[in-house]
Length: 133
Image (cartoon, rainbow, N blue to C red):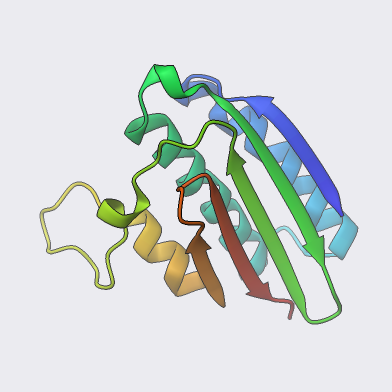
């Protein structure tokens, strides 16, 4: 199991936070750099953090906790926004947004690349499970 806690940076600095996390998870699980699983893990963390940054106000705080754990068959990420405030019910769509829409694809894509994706009732914690292949 790997745990990370940090304050969300500005959008331009976000990659500098995510890349080392994905590198460590990939290294721990022998996931190659060109693997679709690695890309899916990166996409998931990126999209969840971008949603926290874009859809919560500053009074909610910017501290996040990421937990990665795994078995022989699955990898699970839990991404916790310390103060919650994300209205996931309004952001989650069961279908791809219409052509021309500029928002609404991120959470939909996470649902497509993962085995399971959900938020807790408060919108504080996202849980994403992937098949480990």
